[in-house]
Length: 139
Image (cartoon, rainbow, N blue to C red; front, side):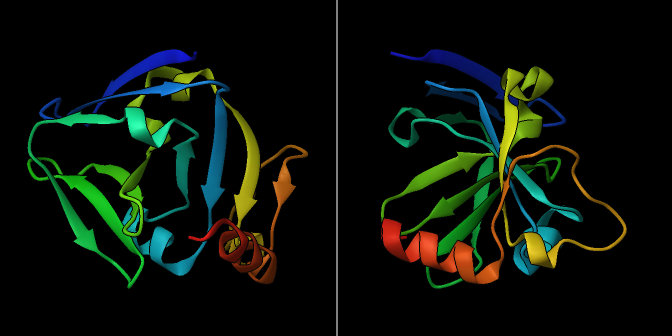
């Protein structure tokens, strides 16, 4: 049993809802996430089966295993999704105060540009550790 979070894109045309048990933020510094967002992609850990997206959302298949969701009207980033299970990892910026979540993990931390860094003592996985984690999870 978790809390329900609700959010929207910049123009409000797309709304999202999901359940979460623990408000956890994740950041990804990989090349594709940075190209998609012009920074890192930050998501709120949620129950993928609970995600509801309403409005003009589109997705782009960015690799053999993943897609990137965006609002067709304003272009806001909505999610990173895995194709093998249909899970959508929702962008933290869709929710007020990033759903009250705390930064817990950074993926591809060794790819983070020198111009910025996240403060805190969250877990920082390098490229090799990130790939190993997702291979272990079946993603």
